[in-house]
Image (tube, rainbow, N blue to C red; front, side, top):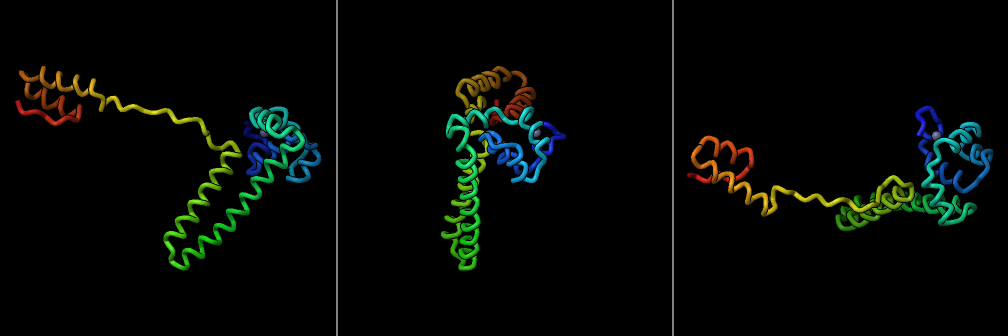
Length: 169
Ligand SMILES: [Zn+2]
């Protein structure tokens, strides 16, 4: 991504990328998004996400990549507009359940748009295991606390940093 590239910094970057990936001419894309074909050419050569191109072509074929992507996003955006209208109605009627349902729909539509734009990483999240709560670790801790029995002050200090309940000797 180029910091001086007007396409990269454009809020419509993802849409432009999709259109470029779909194989539209620089002149047509430039006209549609009011950007210069020269900037588009530089951006396409240097910054167009290879992932977007690959997915678009593989999924839809170069020609229809644009309409599939843009059509879906446009419809989702208009759906969100209408849902927001419904949310106002629900609020006016003080309908908590209705409002919550509409809000949930809005959220999932927004998520879908973000996913389509590649903003969300959908890879599974790594599970973090808290070693402090494993039986092995708590076993080590109690051995340590026990071993420190001859030194009560050290024992108290260790229990405090290890966040365990100090056992009175
Ligand atoms: Zn760029």
